[in-house]
Image (cartoon, rainbow, N blue to C red; front, side, top):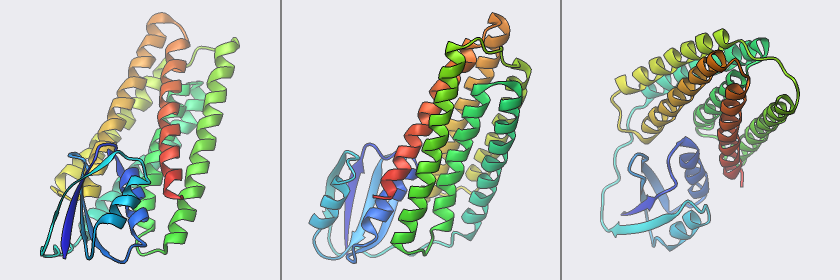
Length: 264
């Protein structure tokens, strides 16, 4: 058994991890993958030469670099991840629940910031769902699920962008800043609970580390929507809401493109 260590500078969230897993899954010489997302490291346990694996990773264009290959290493024992899966189910439920809440209140309060934040929550739910539902599934099924999810998310992001542009060029009403602040604060609490659950697991597994990174990014987005709500109040203007909405829709579109790469 050999172990090849790669540095992958563009691997910073669960979608890149899924891309790599799906890309390398057809290779019979690959026996196990070990991810260290915070440090952008990937360890591949394999038989034979590393050339085919290196070429496959290069096709993903994630700026990878082979650091070293060790011979005669032992394959690590697979850990029991039932507890981790249970936590991820909770995190998925919190994200999807706040997607519904923020989408509904966003349209009621005329806030594109809340609508965009809801789609960001949905994007996370899709990634977590892909990780949980695709376990043991055939590679063709994984790619089909990824493609449907990616196009759905991209369609929602495009609709969001079009609505931001419509409101930008029309005399639309100023959003209800109270809803923006209250709902985004609740979403912030939800993400803090998710981060607490993930950290409570005290796991060094890649998907748990990636989930913590994803949730930390969501907390920043929640804070941005809260700040936009305050600016709407202070300036009595719709522009801060449209600005944060456009920024978050861009992040959602970026996530959709990443998911669609899984289906290639």
